[in-house]
Image (spheres, rainbow, N blue to C red):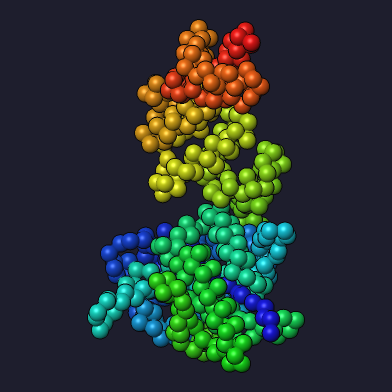
Length: 478
């Protein structure tokens, strides 16, 4: 029997506010454990939560950017469960009146586009963090994260493969980063993803029994965990076994999922309206103001780059993956250089440097006008492409200007014919076989001679001028 995979994703995003969702404690990452707490986020009796206005605005912006209907009336609920890192024994969340409903993200597949519907966007508070010590019979708990504003984005079960899940997450992360409401750093836990996955016989509409996957720390991990779970469920169903509805953990080291607990349903949490937080009503003016504050989003920018700058969709996609890279690219274009040339330098040497060093674009000491200056030196024949790459490397690693790097590298291109005549003379004298090959009709031999001239000049010779001189001299010989 053939099965169809059905996947729904729940993405949790830490909002980049200075203080927590319902109190004034700092949200700064990496401080000493349990130093960013107060009676409110620790759930002391008599303490009262106050909603963070910035967190609310960020949440509405995300909902609008994801094409959701921003709700004009919302409320907060208590989601009741016991866990050591949840000091109140309940989490302030939203149940039936969330911030946004019925949105979508469009993803690009190989030969088509696909719309993934978003069921809901709601705001809640995060729990603390348990630290399990190896070879110990105890765990430690850090409450610093407790109460940080956490936005949950729940997709409909419209995803049918691990690749689609990967593309959805990539697009979602990019939109949130463009909005500037979160850094989406999975290593620091500011973006987390749970996946609900089930299989059903092809052609059936009813969903199969689902399992929830947790503990996936990268988009690659999500893809691998889904791949594994699909094979596991196919194996069980193929043998006539039933799938157990449960939560399973992804083990990165062993590359498999293992059972954690039976899956909870909504009624297990005994949701009820939080009596300490009044319902909120949004005016249309409030929603319209936030809508106007939404910047140009990735897909819109991609369309502009293909339309205005004549980049291909794939080229535009490379640039839009980083908002800071887009700013750098557009500043370079604004200085009068052809966009395609800027793209070639960004997609080649610059991204290679970023991948090698692990630096962010904003951390690199490279001003747009310096890259433009380097490109102009190539266009004017003062530097060869090869030499320019060496100069660019000096600029990036040492943080120097184009002029300083050129001077330091000593790679200024030789275009003076008198100087090149001497180099060509030597090349022709030392390579009689290649000269004879060219004279007998093997035109490719000219490139070998040009290469020898470049070698002799240590890459400084202008290859076009060298080629012209060689052709002129060999024409006289013939």
